[in-house]
Image 1 (spheres, rainbow, N blue to C red):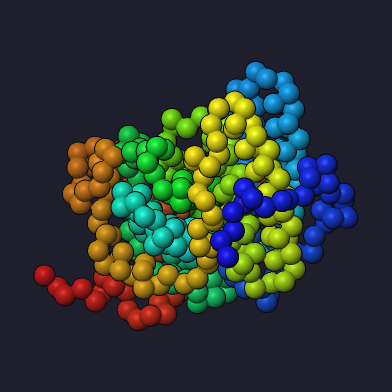
Image 2 (cartoon, rainbow, N blue to C red):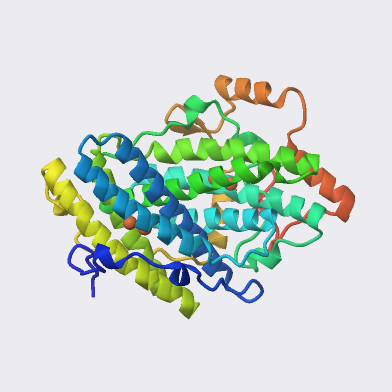
Amino acid sequence: MAFDPLQERGIPLDEQLRDWRELNVTPIDPDHADPYTRCRIITMNGIETEAILFSHQLARHCPDIEAKRQLARVRYLEAQQQKVVNWLLPGVASVLETTIAYEQVAVDLTSWVARMEPDPYLRQAYQFGVLEDFDHLYRYANLYEMIEHRKAEKIVDNLTEVMPGRPTYMHHRDPVDNVREPYDRTTTEPLSRLHALTIMAAEQQTMNFYMNVGPMYMEPIARQLYQEIALIEEEHVTHYESLVDPGESWWEMLLNHEYNECYLYYSFMETESDPKVKNIWELHLSMELEQLRLAAEMFKRFDGRDPEQVLAPALPPPVTFEPNKAYVRDLIATQIDQTTLGTGYVREAHERFSKMQDAIMGGEQPPSERVIDDNRAVSGQEYRLETEGPHPADLQPTR
Ligand SMILES: [Fe+2]
Ligand SMILES: [Fe+2]
Ligand SMILES: [Fe+2]
Ligand SMILES: [Fe+2]
């Protein structure tokens, strides 16, 4: 049966506050947890973080003190949700292990979104981005083998392959070329809005994470690789946030945020393999339903429209973490040599791209290339996890 969050009753706001005992959740088992449970946790942490940051931005632009008070109440509960979600992580992982999990999220979440996205221009934006985070995974996996002497399959568990995508050094574009055209809020499919919000939030969390943890390693190559990839995540946030129509009012954006939280908690409740974690998705969904109802009231009051005019009549099929190996391999075979020019995509290294490349490389090999050479020197060979046969580039007929 179709699930319409606008018709469902949630937990009243007064009953959503949790005490220390309830906030102190039992983390997932570091050795036996499903890697996709960890991916769902990381995704929801990014979503809750975006809910908090967005609400702060809205509050800073809101002159109505009553509305501001309600935003503060809901935001405090979002902050509790974020704590519960992120505290499901067990605490034994190194920074690099968490990093590898973040890139696995980027690969399999963005691939899913690309596969489901109805709008071809938006789909292209996700396909373009996924080949880059896929390559980040490979670079970090090599750093991990080199400095922690472990293999990334311990983390990604054969669900996601680890091998070159679009080479990381090719991701350094002139910032101007990272701005895409937005969807049109008056004609877009409701699903497209949700996709854009989800990937924007996930990439924003990755950007924030690398900005903060990058200097936590002492090894120069690690510090340098985090600097390089953190700058690319800045590009990715620019790329994905520009897909959202800036003509949406603040209250429409709030409505979309709450609706998307409902969609993702519902999705993960439906697909979760760990019963204890599933309970949390279910509880948080019940909270979000009420938060959505309040956002819908604010939308009616300040925007003057009906929520039904902008939201879908029911939730789309659940967002699912599953392997996307064939999909990613197909993108590698067909889109590896793309870059952006203005709001579109091209295959040649145009003038602005080359200029940026020269400026940032400064005549030196970038950290993302050196890390592979360095690991070969230490481990005897570079690290790859090619579960489906040789790399697609090696299968291409030679021209
Ligand atoms: Fe939330
Ligand atoms: Fe990445
Ligand atoms: Fe990214
Ligand atoms: Fe919420």
